[in-house]
Length: 151
Image (cartoon, rainbow, N blue to C red; front, side, top):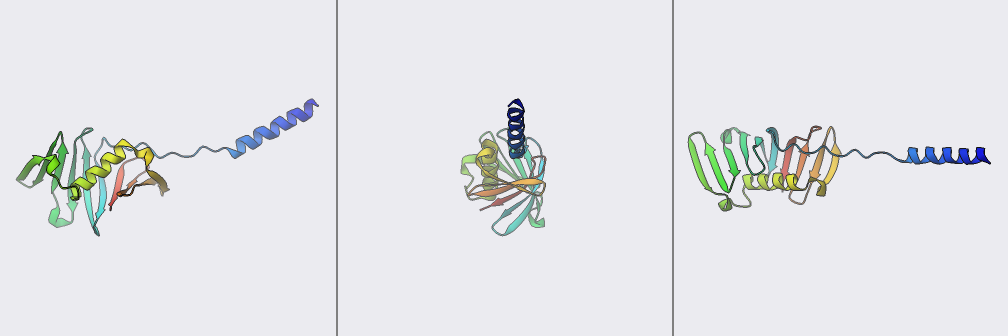
């Protein structure tokens, strides 16, 4: 009887261990470092550098297309700044149109920062793609943003 109970316990332990596997979770997004990424919006691809300076401040610098290279958008502490070479324009961030490229990037990043676990995550290659109705965001294996696809 003891042998049968021991055998039964062994079989149950093997079945339980064999049926369990730990699901790989996406890495925590790194939103405190600069990253190079591609932003796709309205059939145009922009190579950008996004700098996360603090919780409320970020900069977006367009590198390509060449005509916009060096165009920088900065937003934080209720202020918005657009700079291109020596030209600098400042305004209240509430005046930035919701459909503008920098506002859409900012909205996507802030949404991702606030609630990455609520987005649909899919492993793609070595990173993950997080999707929402407004955007898809691709991270690498370390959690750095590499692509943003805006709707």
